[in-house]
Image (tube, rainbow, N blue to C red; front, side, top):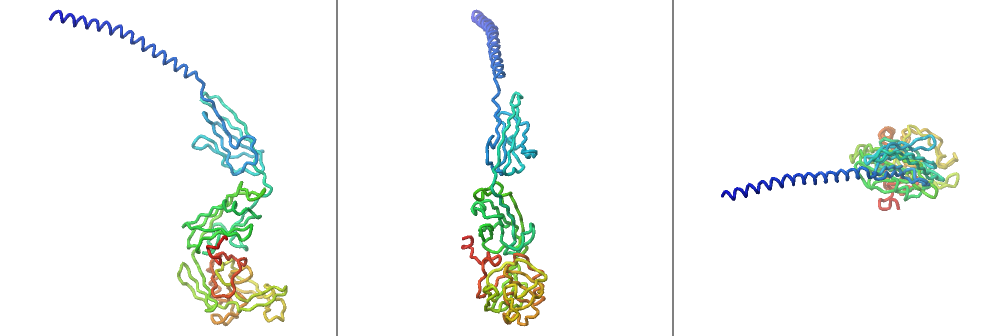
Length: 410
């Protein structure tokens, strides 16, 4: 037992000695490791930071750049400190984006030379400056756009229009239709689908399949800046407008019943006796054909005039001996529905309202009814004349609704 205890004690002593040595050895190894780590850190600290890469788009020397394209400056492995873009004495505004890049916010112009001076610092604090320049495209012609209610009047931003009012965009010269349509953005609330129809090479219409619902909000954007619209032809600038549909008013005039019924949002609100074109035709002083039938089909209100001077000379009858001749006369409460001169108007001389068609083509109404129409109708309201033997010509007003939707735009 004693011998065994000695062995144990001896073993403990040996272990203690080993621990001390080993401890010293262990400390020495740790110190070596620490020294190696420090050397690694020193080596790492002395390693150069990744190179700063300062980039500018468009590239320096670029020509025919679209003014719609933004200028973008990025600093890879660094931080932007300043960006200045100028042409002549004019500076271009811009701002830093969420990703740290800089992007121009001010519009560029056609045919200008732009200079970009960008400064950035790398991880060590060293600054790099990059100077770049480019030129925007120089068009032979620029195209302006206007918004029309019809060929007689401009569309007024924010105004209420009738349920038959199409979007009408007029260009200052003929354009590539596909490119122009692609640049047009139309949004409505509630949302509806629609189609384009080109009245000519410079005027495009857009309408939904059915008349607008009352209260619809319409926003139109034409994003033409930088858009090529033909050989050497570009859009001048981006434009926009908006309007609303006040309520859905549809007036239905029956040629044979001699009545005009007015519906607002589907509800009949007024029935009016009327007298339409007497029919037949004549030859004007310049040899032109003159029809006395009121044109049929859905018309759209073009304008309203408290007083309008009418005479037979306005459509070609100038000979006082002609039975269809009549001298100039001021007519009250005139609501125009065609460019050729068809109106809904007061006709106190016509004693056949509701019984016979005796006019030269207008829709004759009593003074009270014509006054009501003048007061309540909006530009763009629909006047649908039914059972007329003469169709409305597509050029003779806003005749969009005379074209079936599946044919519209063809």
